[in-house]
Length: 394
Image (cartoon, rainbow, N blue to C red; front, side, top):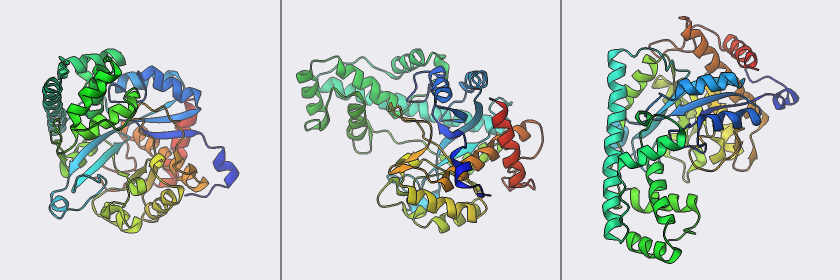
């Protein structure tokens, strides 16, 4: 659509389709804190987009609706496309050829899973939990060799995460960032000189950050002790693209491609041409894309939106909030606010997701059908319905 005037565009409410909520690693300590931030910042629709486990979604739904915020349900996967991995093609993960992050939008998280979908969900969770346990064990052993006996294991860290987030322990599936935070907190209890001595032994050289800066040290621990070639490295367990795509559809969602674009330099080859990227996605049955503008320039954001919409795709914007930095929920670029063009595109894409989620929950066709193909419902109709649904929450 993309037809509103500049003044009308500026008046559009804040929407955000990609936010990680605890117990995923998040800028927010609890669901309540995230929802409070949304209301304080005038957000009218927020999309939860967690990895590994969706049991917190009921709490999010209840609290968001009580606060007048439209809850949108999504999820995120790390997938592997074998032929692109074999060819060494970097997709939207600059460090791992063949790895594709894939999202689902407008899913039905509370429905009874079919047998195949339940098996995929179990596979995702089990693979990640096993990896996290190995990672923690390796890091604990390495730090003990370097003079710091932390006593940490995956169960201890998961219990801390659950307590901090105010959720059940069974909802927690540890991520690298949780692990890095747990070891950073153990290091923070040491005197500075002792902390730096331990780190120098662990790294094989001095720390390059202010070790009293929790966020900076967590980032350094990940890069120097958890990534490939380091003592804590354990390979990720990606899902096949086909299984992830099937799972999104089984959960009534819209398969969605999260775009890295110029969030890395050089741009990943799969994404180098926005037009070719859009064509590749359509050929794989993907009719929706998402940007995280806080890692992109405004020029790049607009270029990818134009290519996506020209290919008949919808596009959304999010912030992730998957670090401790409490950036605004209103999406913005590295070089300033998003353009009016981008703001309108993100609004319309969000409206489509809201409408799809509502329609499919009522047994009617939404933006895509169960095969992943576009339905016959018009985008303009979906935008109008979605806008009404979002405004009804106020």
